[in-house]
Length: 185
Image (cartoon, rainbow, N blue to C red; front, side, top):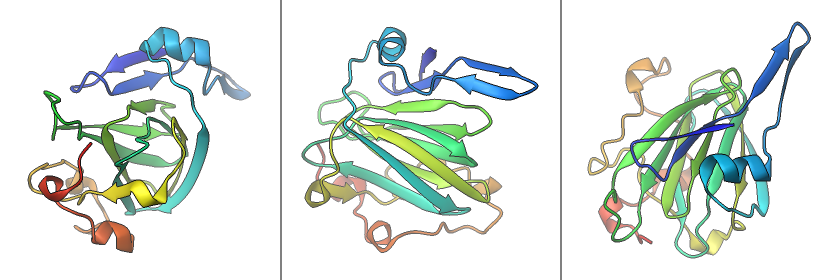
């Protein structure tokens, strides 16, 4: 397992060891000791989530104002552009974002620590996204930031969107707050 810091060094792109041959492949999708050794992060995961979404679906940018969650995200079918936004008060990178393409083909994972809003857009026909969280989902504490907030200026790689210029959003995400109007950690 290899962990590579992104432009915001607390967010890590993780590349697991994949062993393949003519039969297919094998990889450890998670190993606590290897994760801690590669990342320096000692996290306890309490919940695993699985979402399936169609091409053009954008989920996020989500966070919890209390019980913030660290997330270890991976894709087991399809491809997404995964985005993390630093929302930590006092952080030198507050309001900045990083992204990575995660797919079933590249096996990469993204470590999104507590204090970040998280979202993704589906680039393939469908995508199955699995993510481990460090705290339980708490709907009363969940908040959303607008995916297209001009203050964040996230590059969602829209030039590659074959479905048009607008993503498919949930009602919650359509009603999301601007970054500067959000309850920030």
